[in-house]
Structures are given as structure tokens and as C-alpha cells.
Image 1 (cartoon, helix red, strand yellow):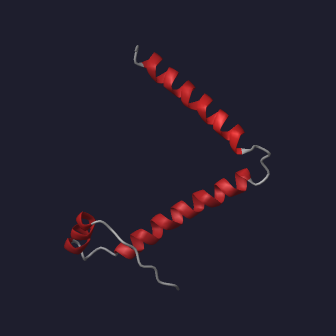
Image 2 (cartoon, helix red, strand yellow):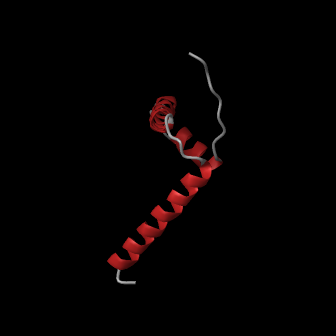
Length: 77
């Protein structure tokens, strides 16, 4: 199994050092697998898509506008 070295902020390093009973490498490995699975799912979903980046950005803006409207309506703003 290959090894990986990563940089972490000093504050996080202090917490990690304080809790040496935790298998931090296993936590990092699980988090990376979770992200990798999401990327694989995204790749599978978009593999046959005919949308281009402009189309995606237009859909993104419409979704965000709809969510903002729903939020403002729900909060009587």
C-alpha cells in the first residue's frame, strides 16, 4: 500500500498529538474513500451527459435562485 504525506495546520496537529490513541491515518483513509466514492458516482452520472460548462452554470444559477426564493419565502423576508 502506498504512503502519503500531508500537511495539516498547527492547531490540528496539536489535537492529533494530544489524542494519540486515535488511528488518525484510518480516519483520513475513510474520509478519502468517502470523497472518492462521491467522485466516482459523479463521473458515472455525468459520463453520458451532453451538457457543456455553460449549460451547467445556467442550471446552477437557476437552482440557487430557486433555493434563495424558497428560503426567503419560508422566513417571510
